[in-house]
Image 1 (cartoon, rainbow over the protein chains, first blue to last red):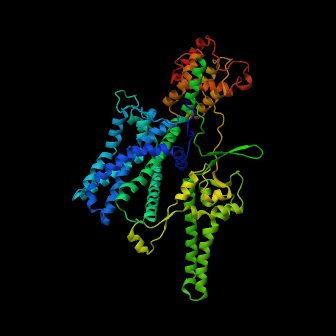
Image 2 (spheres, chains in turn brown, red):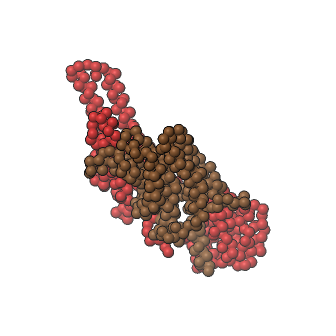
Image 3 (tube, rainbow over the protein chains, first blue to last red):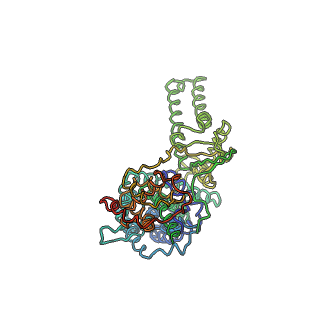
Length: 291
Length: 309
């Protein structure tokens, strides 16, 4: 591993350039990104169908179809940061290696799993959100819709102002707790990285809404292609359970790539990460020559 | 193992027939979409203004040829704005439209030269192709309300996928007339950083006189010193420590010398002092260690209170 030979050119970039670069990164690692996304997204798809099972008997009616589709979109929106964790790990590994290696990538310490579960799955509302969606599908479950709305707002704000929590957990691997006040924990690192850049984070969150038209465009094309090829224009179970989630997961995977690049960019601007890589590479050469 | 694959980047190298290389940064779909939306807003605003003028002039209220003139003006305005706005601006504004100018991007040929009128028109001719494929409205009640079941909504996927598949981010119109869109780089080149701390200059004197920094070390030290003012003290120590720590050992300097100061001293010695470049003996070995005696003399410099941050 050579620190100053990264697979993605390291320099400061603007937000739009990061989204454009995300397309190039997506192109080079397309197969691996798809596999990494599918490995987590497929179990989530099955789980989502199970959570919405109560609505299935009424599925042909228009109102229930809209409700079913809407709840499916909410579930995937909430699950996306957790489901794209493998994409982040893969890209982290790919940064310094010609060929990302699954074994090396998955050798990440198991301590990361409880951290991800507590900080992302619980505190960022993934598991509570899934529970609330399930409650909404029960008879007279509409009242839970208000709590679901509050939870989505809470998760959206958290993800907007502190978007890189997953990257900090998976790539920086700081401890969750520390008695020593000088030890860099996940919380301290997150605060140090996000708080001084609050304005940038808000603008980035606003720019991330481009995922909505992107998801709509992909979904509409899949739906129209199916309609033209097979004459099925309805929003049936196949469309709602498989094709709609696939289009949303594709966008979630792309947004994970864009988020990873934004994280690197923030570290470059805030912490001079590219300087550290050059200095560390030179230090390794120096040690080699001296030895 | 050293990487053999080019790093992923939107920067392009163009070599002229005179064998001079230029670097351009290609503008991707998202930056160009923003410029497109700005231009679209301008076109809509101009069309609405023309429409209001036509309505206020009373042409639309009349019957006969005058009413037809009103329709003709509106139709002509729509046609010209839709098909010639981009082409005319790019021809007379050297590859830019108002939207492109706002986003600091410019259409050029793939050789980096200004585009001509034919290229400007050609690349704008295929703008509608980028909006493909069109999809029907998604719900039946929408199709019934519009009374049109066919393709209607532009999804812009061609405009997203085609540029992604080539390294220059060229859309269909660009591929047809061999043009591309680049970002105008107006960034300033970094000057040589000033070393205002006298202690760095003093410390530079303790670097062995026969030491010559190699190109990669020069680059690493220059990168650090040019950016260090943006970092906190702790972060400076963290970054500089990687290189300064083994360097202090090699030069037999006190281990508690400030890492930041050590790299500043090396920078001063390499780029600013009399011994830099021409001043150093060329036959001295690179990465040579210094005499042990330097350590004793340095105590006074290294022990100053703020030095060991």
